[in-house]
Amino acid sequence: MRSEFYRAIATLIILVSPLGASAASSPSASATMAFSQGQAYQRLFEDHVMPGTCGIVLERPQCNADFRTIQAMQGPDPTDAAMTAWLATGALADAVKDANGTYVPDRAWTTNPDFAWWYSAGLVSIAAGMPQNEGTTEYLAHFQDVMASHDGLAPVEYKGLILASGTPFARLQPLQAALLRTIPAAPYPALELHAGAKGDVQLGIYESTLQELLDNPLALSRPESRAFGLLVVRQLQAINDAYGTGASLAVVSKPLSGDIPDTAGINAMRDALSRAVSTKWPLARRQAYVLGAFTAQVAYNAAVLQDPAADAMFRGAGASLGYDGMSPVVAADLQVLRRIPNAREGGDWKAINAAGSRAVVDMIATP
Image (cartoon, rainbow, N blue to C red):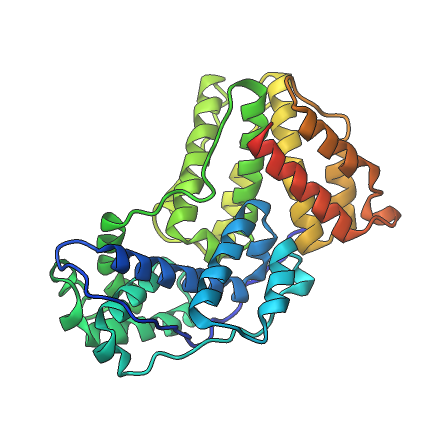
C-alpha cells in the first residue's frame, strides 16, 4: 500500500543575503540564523525530491515554515502561489515540480563570508546524514569541495574537520557532528504525551508519523527526525517491557543512530514498528493507540498514496474505536471524518485529507 518517492538528487541551489560578522568562539545570533536558513533550504530541497514528506500531517508545519523562510530570502517567485497551495494540504498531486532559487556566486565567500560559511554549514548539518547512494554521494561532493576550499573561513573550532580522504559522507561527518554539538537538533515533531488513554492515542499518531517518514528516507535521515524517532521507539519499548511482550525495537533504533538503510532495511524497521503494539497491552490502551495511528494513516493516505482499499480498511477499523476522556473537539472531528464516504464509495480525497488532518492535529493538541 506504500509508495516510494526516492529518486536522484539534483544540483544544489543556494540563496544568499548579507550577514554581519560572527564571533569565532561561538555562533552569534546572525550566524545561528544563517545556519537555520541553510537547514531550511536543505529540507525544502529534499521536500521537492520527496514531496510525500509534506503529506505527513505533523511534518506539514515545518514544510510551510521552511518555504516561508526561503521565500523571505529569495523574494517573489512565479512558483509562490503553487507552493502555497501545495503546502496547505500536502497533496502529492499538487506538488511543485521545479524549485527556483539563486546560485551563490564565488564572490559571496568574499563579500559575505560569515553568512556563506554558516549557511553552507546549515546545509551540511542535514545533508551529511542522508541515505548513502550514488545520487546523494554525487550531491554531497559539492559540499565537500565548497567547505574544504573555504576551510580558512571557518570559525576556529571547525577548522580542519573535513577529512582528507574517503567518501563525501565520511569526509563531512566530523564537521556535521561538531555543528550538531554546538547547535543541537530538537526532536521534530516534538513529542507531547498526556497521561492515560490520551497519551496512547498521541503515541499511535507518533508511531504512524515515524512509519510515514520511512516512506520518505530523506526526511527520516534529518537530525530532528532521528531524535523524534528515537523518542517514539523508547516510549514503545518501555511499554512493551512493562507488559513483558518480548518485543524489541533495536532494528529501528540502531539505524536512527547511524546509517539510514536501503529498502530491505527500511522494511525491517517498518515490520518491527508494526509489531510494537501487543495483545498483552490492555484492550483500552490498544484501542486508543490504534485509533490515533489509523487516523494519521487516513490523512497521509488521502494526501499521498490515495489507495481506496487502505482508506476503507483504516477508516472501517477505526470507526468503532474511542478512548476515555476524549475531548469534544476530537469527538466532533471524528464525526466529520466518519460522515465522509470512503474513497471506494465516492469519498473525495481532499475532504478526507482535510478532515483526517484536522483530527490528527487536535488529537495532539487537545486529545
